Length: 405
Ligand SMILES: [Zn+2]
Image 1: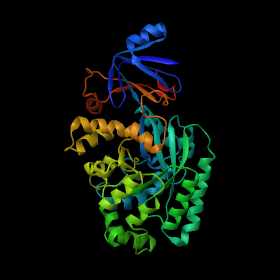
Image 2: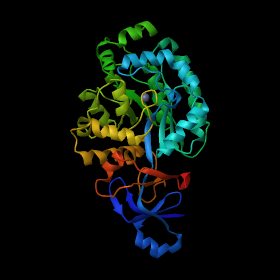
Image 3: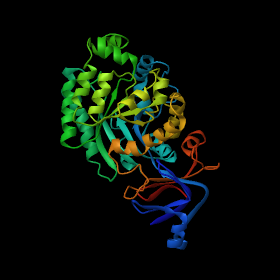
Image 4: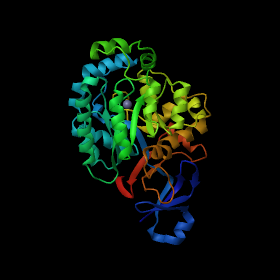
């Protein structure tokens, strides 16, 4: 059992000054330091001035297989970026071996990420994810819009899915990703979702990332048209946006990006109990625009903040991601948005990914960060933690120290 006494416990809802936390695998109590001292005496570990205990962070959307990218891919617009992915995909994938993926996972851990959702295109990241100390929701990605290739593509997807299901460890969750409405044939989508429903698997999908996607799905025209005609001999979008969302009616799903939705689509998302994953840095770098957060909130749709992969980001760091979001959504009240962002990478991400963590409260898994700030703690801590990031001194996952002293 650990008894840590901190300057503050940041529970995402409240900043509890002079409080400590008692935990083993799960959290037992959050109690004023003086009470803990009286009760446990020498067993207490005093963390001292500037210490803040908070929940481990949850990054709901990352593509680890593209972690070798630094300056290879073209930023500024979605189509130039996509073309650069097509041209460099093999090299980037080959350049990221198991060590590269394991290092990337370790970088996330050092940045306080104790759980993540990894979208896997090829299964090359399976070993590293299976060995990771973090909780991992492992999304095997299904892609393929050509009906003639449907069986082969589904078989490949199934092989990867089964391989991940063969990997039994606590905190590892084999799951399903449907790439996007424009890239997956409805037969494949329906087959995969029916499997997900039968086996209670978690599901994610990209949705309405770029203006080009909107145009292609609505009008079968725009920048996607030459791309699909040249690469895939396809003249019509694989799905309409509304049909696509309709397939997910009974499967609560994490939809990534959703920068260009229509009102009807947001209503469907709300009805379906879906979650939106907001990746502000990726959206900016690929020229995709800004998520309309106020509108998402007006529909009461849960949203979480994620990093996306290093194919469209310079770091897998939720502190950085939240800071960018804080500045991007400049019309929102600063402190309110800061709190919402903290919720988005803790309690809300845990709910969306169905994990028993993300909250500093009794009976939740003790996925905990011990951090330190070098400034006085006050009621604006959620803002200051983003502007002047803390030092992460140790990281606990289910009560086990996995990083730090
Ligand atoms: Zn993505």
